[in-house]
Image (cartoon, rainbow, N blue to C red; front, side, top):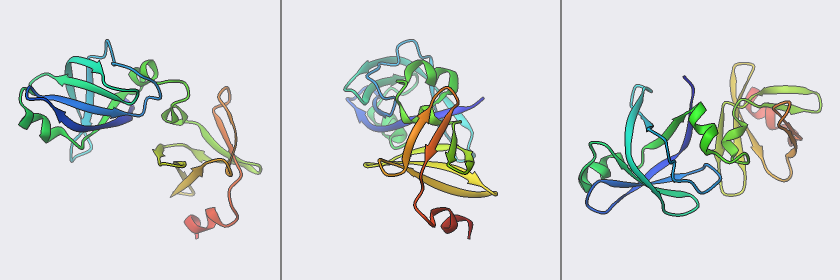
Length: 171
């Protein structure tokens, strides 16, 4: 099963074990109907946390009460953990415009495809898309100067990269 990172548990809220999840779903949501969200352990295994209750805090934050987390101290132990959803759940809750929807798209330049987007990293003024080219990890910046177009039907992102960018990664 594929998982998509949706955000991070950023704070404990109150005394009964509630948490604040800061998400990147691109729209206001309470995750209504979602049974569980996942965190990753040290062995890269995904641990399910079953949801008792959620409510909207803001456009990008949700209050979440998880089963078996009944105190502020227990909640604090989960803060700073990234939150993940199974891919099919992510598609239900994410806005079409959410950057994580680009996962699986192919980055293409005028002379052909470079690679499939394996991870989307959000930064203040750009997105970084992690791809693999010739077995090496490459980070492709997406912002006004590099992004030419996105074709959702073909699942392609057309870019114009600065001279020398690929050579930095590929030697």
